[in-house]
Amino acid sequence: MIRRLALLGLLAAAPLSAQTDARLVTAMTLAREGLGDSARAVAGRLLNVTAPADPLHAEALYTVAMVSATAQDKRLHLQRLAVEFSQSAWADDARLELAQLDYAERDPAGTVRQVERLLADYPLSPLRAAAALWGARAALDRRETTRACQWAALGLQAVGDDLELRHQLEYQQQRCGALARGDTAPPVVVTPPPPPSPAPATTRPARQWFIQAAAYGSRAQADRLVARLARARLAALVVSEGGLFKVRVGPYPGEAAAQAALPAVRREVGDGPFVVPPR
Image 1: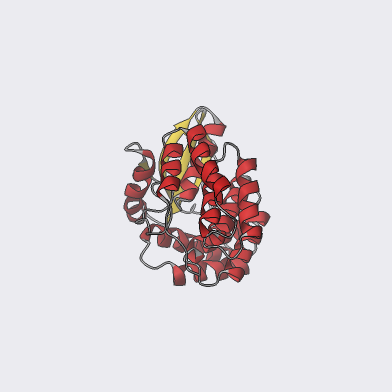
Image 2: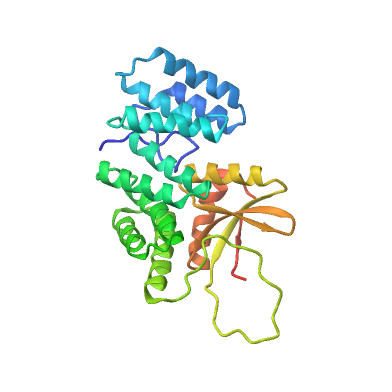
């Protein structure tokens, strides 16, 4: 389906299309600057004055969801968009956001369901590769190896020239292959390493590279950044370490892939992110 390009600054870097309304771009920019109330007022006013049959109504509803004050409000608006406006240019975006929201809330089964719907209902969507990435991650969490392998392969076929997304899909394909062979797959969630054991290691741990985006004293702050990075098509997780909640993007199969992705992360959060080598 024909889909409007992502709104400025909060989704993957891409030029705005001619159809994107400047008022909604303003709302998204206000939200990024921390002016959530103003963002919601701008988007809400436009939603209220457009008729449901107007294509701008669906775009406004999507924007209202993206600037919502709570995850619950965001989910309600996205679900309405996905169901009531399933033929709109923003319905596939809503499905992908719901998949990411489910994953952030530790519901991989929900992520799998949303990805299934997106891929079935919108087979020509430019979001296929991103949806396949999140679906593969969630399927691997559930040890659904066959499904994960299929989605990783689909994503790599559809990814185009997005190197960041390609690296992440390749990593999920490696994990999928390891599970299919009966090897120990790299974990999705990273935990602090255990104290050194005097016994020699019998297996070599997988070498995972990450980009550390930020560190917070609050889990809620870390989760908010994970959700923000997800909107920019950057898969992230939270690591509890040293009394801090560290937000890390990845994993990547090697240092070169992580370094290549570093500029994209810095565009979202500033100059602080850095590459974290395997431990």
